[in-house]
Image 1 (cartoon, rainbow, N blue to C red):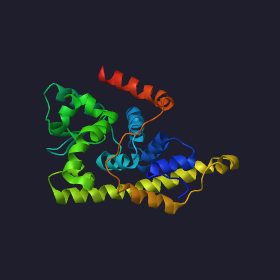
Image 2: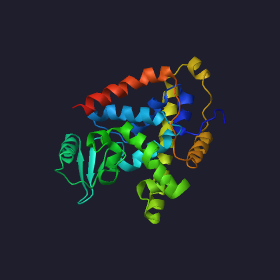
Image 3: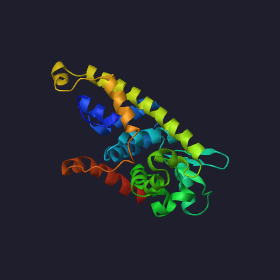
Image 4: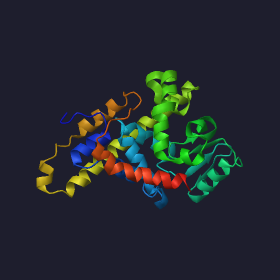
Length: 252
C-alpha cells in the first residue's frame, strides 16, 4: 500500500491532507445527516479527539454508529424502551443523580448502562455522558474485562459478555458499520480532492479503493484500541478545547 496504516480514517487523513479528527467528524455527519443536534456539536468534536488519540479510531466510530447513530444527548430507558433526547435527556440525568429515576438506562453516545458501569464514572451521570470519558472507560477499564472474557471477539462482548449468540450477532452488525464507514470515507476523499488545486493533490499519495477495503479488513482483526502518544504540539492544539468544555459541563 502507498501508506502504512491500519485505520480507514487515518488512511483518509493521510490521503486528503486533513486531520484524523476532521475525517471522523465529517464521515459521522454524512453517515447520519440531521442526526447530530446543534447542542451536540461539542460532543462530536470531543469524541473525534478521543478516538483519534487511539491507534484504531475506526472501531470506535463503528461501535458508536451502531449504538446511537452519533446521538450524544441521549438516554435510553430499557424498561419500556423509552428514549430521551436533548434537554429531556439532561433532565433525566439530573433526576438520576438524585436517585429519583430508573437506573436501568443506557447513557450517551456509546450507550453504557448506568446500573453496571456507574462506578467507573464516579457515580456521576454527567461524567458518563461525556464522550471522552466513555472512550477512556472502554480502553482503561471495561476493555480489560471484555478482552479477558472474549479475547479477540471483544467487540461482541461489548454488547453482551454473557450471551454468545447475542454477542456474535452484535459483532456482525458492527462489521456492517465498517462498510458504511468505508463508503463515507471514499466520498469524503473524492469531495475533498475535488476542491484542491493540482499542486495540492500532487503532494498527496494516490487513492486506491482496494486499499481502503484492505485496511477495513485489517481493522477487524485488531485487538482493543490503545492510546497513542501525541506530540506536545498536538495536545496544545486539541487539548484545551476538550478540557475547557469538560470543566464547564461538569461544574454546571
